[in-house]
Image (cartoon, rainbow, N blue to C red; front, top):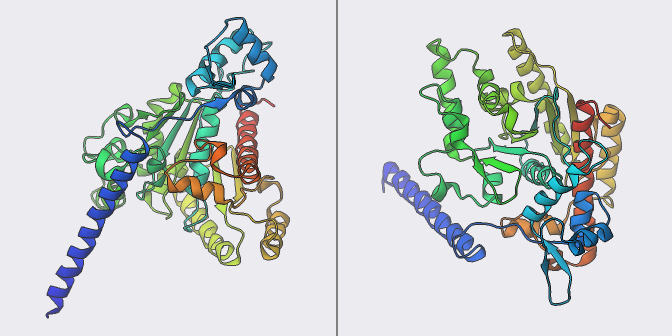
Length: 395
């Protein structure tokens, strides 16, 4: 058999395997989210709803008994369950009687600028997508208007939100359409609502790699302009629609990441506290600094409101991880978030059904496992929310 024949056979096998996998994933989605394969957010208990709204459960009960606000679903045991739309409606109701503006709707006020958070690291397995997806959902559940952008061609955050790139994006629909050099579309054309009120999504797929191929060609033809402004310019079209944009950056320092860095007001670097990952991060930081210098020399303002490191997949009982964590905190001080994201089977098990931990019911896990994981996620995301508030000049 000739070498060419072997190559053709391998290509065929890879293509067949890709098609089979896509079909199986599509079938799994239809079985998990029937009848139309659209995802829905679970209902929240009255205690969970009260915690998200920042009120007492007894106050929620009083609102229900007084006939104010949405009527929650009542279980046979007379427990109240609230949908995400119920939460959104309650926020509007509570804000009208709040002591001060923003008690229940914590987003931007006049003079506040859009927060664009770039979540990045070029090392695989650092928890970048897990962080991005949970951060975007938590902020939306807390009342922020959020746009999540999947800038990673692998499109894992897209899949977590119920969109399968191979089936749902056959003709584009990613940010590439809005930042391409030939006939870009308005960014509003690629924004789609999710099943969580206040959270919109720009999905990703392999088409995003076209930007990495197009940019060198455009630069050689002097047709790229200030290419690193393309994401920022696209976001300016919807600046007044959102409080926060969360960008899941690709795991490489290419043109997409450079453009995301130029648009970002805050940078979150995920770190798995293992020695090989920390060594890799050293190269990542050095290369990022060099790229930012190049962009700044071209006239861009590369100042950011904040930059933080997030420890991910952290195991408190792992002695080597604890030593590396102490090492990082000694070096970077308060640039390392106080709250680490703990390694948890609950998060990975939720991912098996293409869900975040905020979407799965507590009963799917042992209580201790779920509570430990959700408390870790909330601590991380609420610390980032506090950074956002501080940037706007609020506590």
